[in-house]
Length: 473
Image (cartoon, rainbow, N blue to C red):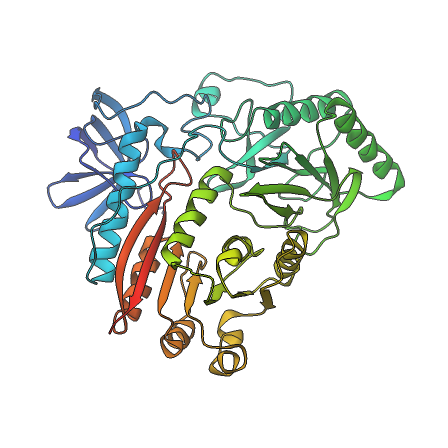
């Protein structure tokens, strides 16, 4: 006999009080902490509990009795369904306030180190169209919203191109207009979609892996260049010819595309890191520009996705480094060497280390393009490359700039930094929680002198933070 499913409670007239670390809002009911998406502090709502544990619960707002004065009207028709831009309902000044609070809370509660006054967060000049890269997914299983299911909406086309629905890997929400990138991205995506509909192209079934069209990546740049990458599963010359027809249509319809590329992916996963990228028309790269420096961006290159805020972030990192032209700088997790090349004119030498070999090749190319001769780049696992022997060979750094992934720095890397004893450390982080943990590990020899949060991703809960540390004594 099947167990009877436990009925979860409806909580009525509950006031939303705060924002949690991952973008959901918080309410407190007796001793229970409740996490709710798509509401803001000050809202009063009825909450339907969807999951309940001993001391916390997750819920959905099923009715709002009073709207907070912190609210903003979401501008995207896909808001609340696609899973992105969770904070569109929160006014931008309030978003910044809560991001600042997130940084303060993490550094004080997790780091537990002595802190200076934390500088006000640098907000993004653009809050729409700020991304320079978006990736869309094709699928033969269009996601239907609750309203569409309830109304028995029937679409002529169940193929869709858009974004994965959170928690449903094989379903894709059909996107008509996304506000994250310049509108050229919408026009290209919709034109490719309509051509594919009209000419009978198959979209991938993400469970059975049947179908042709898989992904489309659009990259824009501050120089006005435009890259489009179409990814398809192709079997035989007849399918390849059909795919070429789609590529030709895309290039002919949008002559502003300066780099039209394609990838044949016959694997069961969507990653293209191990696949060859072919040039159909134009160049195999685009350029970004910053203070007269040009950065080559290929189809697999990492580049900060908010170009304008990346410039402000790198300015902060350079200012915190306090360079005079005499320093040896180590740039850890250098990626494509953007920071390394950006600070090189103010340093004696910059040494960059990065795990991905292709990124290091990009970093060397970027130095060559800009006539920079005082950089050295090394590829490999950070904890294996950055060793006491490496420092003895290449010199003790005066300044270390580190920009690790969300997981933060490996303890072995922290140990070598402590042994190297640079005068200053500039720690750039996309995750203040792991940054705070690492600051605690560095606290014995270093004190925090400056903290500068930077908002790279409006309408999301993500925040970057830059910390300057100075050697004690």
